[in-house]
Length: 343
Ligand SMILES: NC(=O)c1ccc[n+]([C@@H]2O[C@H](COP(=O)([O-])OP(=O)(O)OC[C@H]3O[C@@H](n4cnc5c(N)ncnc54)[C@H](O)[C@@H]3O)[C@@H](O)[C@H]2O)c1
Ligand SMILES: O=P(O)(O)OC[C@H](O)CO
Image (cartoon, rainbow, N blue to C red; front, side, top):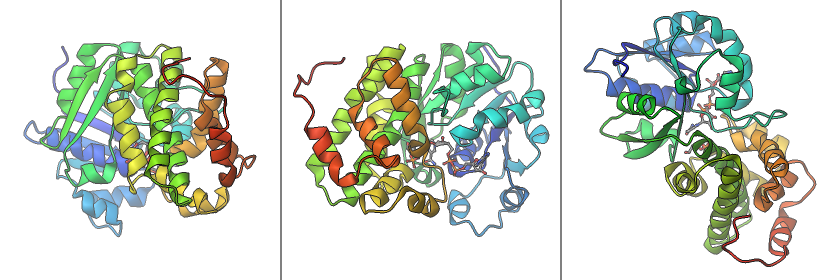
């Protein structure tokens, strides 16, 4: 069993990176733990170190004293036994190439990201194992109903740490357990990752319904059938049914689809109100992974002969081949089938 680390590196100073750094710092404050955050921009590192910031988000997060920051990845990674990856999914591969020489031998890497890489359709854990010389037991994933702002405000939240090695998952869970954050362990990396990726696309669909003024029946139908197609995809890839009915599946889907804090839900709402994708992207200051990952989810499902009609409709809207007005007719006009069919 690993001992508790003195230093943890968090690579990415966006909403979730800084908030999860706070969780780790709060969890390890009595043990004298140092949490160091890598910020891509030097001015963000300075804002974190001085706590002088115009960012409402960073002010609300109230970073504990044992968090520091640097824009130099070598400084951040030196001596860190746990490396937390919290950059946009499409940038992970490139970032790992700039980090890898500085990652300590034996360090455990955990992905906080909920995206699929475009063109390769790779999950983040697959990108990590392709880019870093690392055993599967040192790759983990964190996912669940984890809207960063709520956690920054210390509102009670549960989550899932997944790793093929249950002891490593338990080690990480112990490192991020606080009075407001409760991590469960799981060995089903595939199910946990697919739940987190697919729910962003389903949240776009629910947001579209919201933007078009649809009611709760419509949104509940999308959420439930969205879970059905996510479960089909996860099972086809080797994930477990129970994972998708847990926090990283149903839990995250419900949180993301029902919250105005969700960037994916917000982006969908803007599409439903009639904005073009370019206009939506211009309005989003943070990462809405579903916009970039939707096509990859659809391609992955198609290659595995899995039907994902809601994802397909969202991708068509994103790519401009289906209007939001015609989305409902397309989904409701499909051949009737039994609810219990998983394939
Ligand atoms: N915010 C949340 O509530 C939340 C919760 C759970 C999971 N996540 C996931 O965590 C990941 C990160 O999300 P976030 O909310 O922290 O995003 P964000 O947009 O707030 O921040 C992303 C960070 O990555 C940095 N970055 C590094 N390389 C980059 C590049 N090439 N292009 C753009 N930015 C780059 C940015 O500077 C920024 O600090 C996403 O996959 C998201 O789905 C977010
Ligand atoms: O803001 P979103 O849509 O990226 O969702 C944030 C988290 O993934 C919710 O669990």
